[in-house]
Image 1 (cartoon, rainbow, N blue to C red):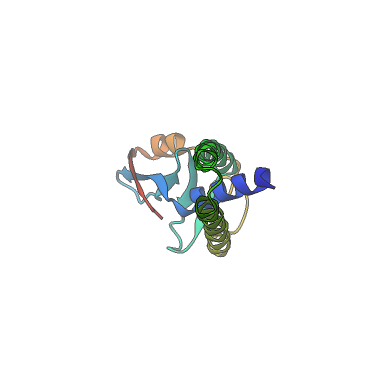
Image 2: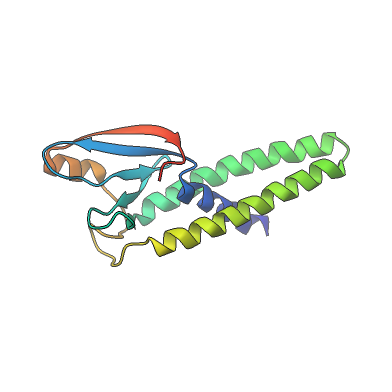
Length: 151
C-alpha cells in the first residue's frame, strides 16, 4: 500500500507548490506565469485567472523527484522509530503525518481538477511545456524564483 501512497503524497506536494519555482518573464507581450517543482509542469492561463494548464511530462518528473525525497525521509523516520524501541508516540505521530499528507493531496487534487484548463493540445494541457521555446519565440527574458507555496 505504501508504494501507492508515497507517489500520491508526492503528487500533493507537487500540486500544492509547497516547494517550487515560479517563472516570471519580461518582454513586450503578455506572458503566462509558469510553475515547477523543480521541473515546469503548470502554466497560468492568460484568459482566466482561475485556470491552469498542465504538462504531463513535467508532472511525472516532479512526482518522481518528490517520491524519492519522501522515501528517503520515510526511511529516516522508520530508523528513528526503531531506535526508540518502537515507541507508540513516535508511531502515532508518523501515522498522523501520513494521514495529513493523504488529506492534503486529496484537497489539492480536487482544487486543481476544478481549475484545470479545458482541452488537450499544444498551448493548453499537453505532454510537455516548453518555456524556453515559447520565451525565445516571443523575445521574452525569463527568470525563476524558488519559494514556498507558490500558486
